[in-house]
Image (cartoon, rainbow, N blue to C red; front, top):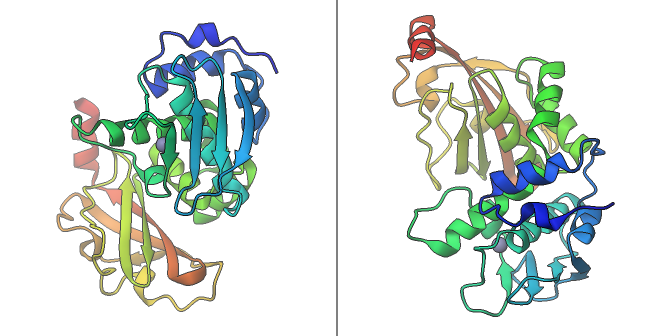
Length: 282
Ligand SMILES: [Zn+2]
């Protein structure tokens, strides 16, 4: 694979980097060969990271002429791929310089940062590296084509896409919700407590917070399925999940039961036509 880094020289956001990079790879194979892409962009080595508590790292020079990416090899393959994309995002972005000067070391928590306040420089770099990684592993144009082919929201589609793109269930679900045309949201939880939730623009405001118990009566809380099993869609009261359910005429919920108490919940709202029409006019 041959890529021209000069084309990326002025790209200071993940979106600009992705645009300039994807233009150079019109026939990108899926799953995306992330290691080959890194190699074509002056990442000379990908080595195991032995330091406990970190998922990835980047060793490079001040001028970023070349670099070595470090990856936690104990993690599942999908997560390792995300880490390579994340570190490549740090490497390619000219304003990403390590806070303490010793190279990047990134934790599993860093790999989950998607938003950051503008005065938190370190968190902003992490969030940008994550946007880059999700965008290179699951390019929007490819992913949207799959969404159109698959149709209405279904947990099975998230699992299928995760296999196709070789990305984690979590990363695939985030992308799925973000790009889906229907109003949907996904909530990640463990042992009955919310970890976090994300929704797309069309989904009503979802006010779940970390540590909050799963809502009473929700499928996520009550489902007694075995590990690695997915419930069907169940209609539930919109009030179970939404504090302001005025514009949701109905809410459906589907839960995927994972190992070790983890659950991934897909929510699908039927939004009132009046609200929808109002938004279309805006
Ligand atoms: Zn990082």
